[in-house]
Length: 268
Image 1: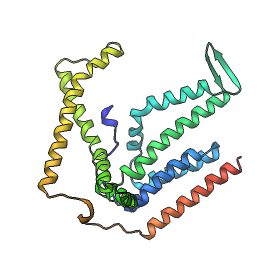
Image 2: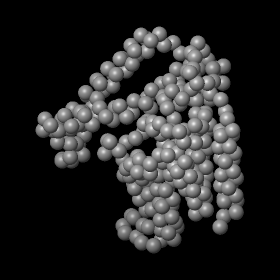
Image 3: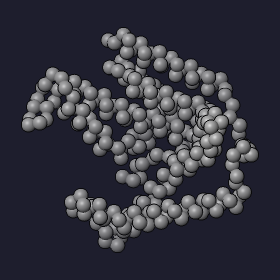
Image 4: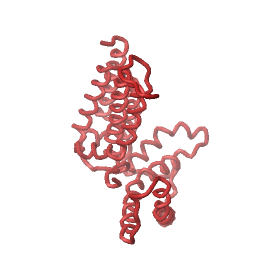
């Protein structure tokens, strides 16, 4: 299961999505999330699904990678769908004790599960899968630069966010190694009640936290040895510049926004 978590991984490539400015990709990601929650009905979700399929297709990311990223979250998706199915008021179809299924509940459950799956796939493909950590840091810092007037440490905040995202795959790999080592020593993580399973995780969490703090200390020492200071004096190998491709992506986003608005104003 841990090997299926791909959050924070970057897949190098030369696709259109890879070549977009990181600031544009951050804006597109937030726009995609807003439009996904604004979509309503079959037409709205069909538009967003077409957008997602188009983005995945031109990004060069394999479909099985996208589907694998959602595997660890299947429980959350199913749990959310079941709650909406049982507790959404409407035309009652079936009832047992305190549970009842309504027509509106089934529709809400399907749309909610689809929304969460599309949210995960879209944000991963638009942002983390196709943007290197360095470019992501530069993009976040550039967008947050106006906050420097409020004396906020913009560069440090962007760096912290990117480092945290970058080390997720590392910590997952470390956790998998610790679990394998504990199983080799006779540890059992799959039997017993919920409390027993929680206690069984203690031998995993302790070395994981120790390893995480050790890696953080090594990273800080490495940055100091390289005379890293950051801030205004930091230079960049690649300066961020908007191109026609970026403006075209923003124009496509505006067109999708218009379609979503029209699908809400004139529902079918």
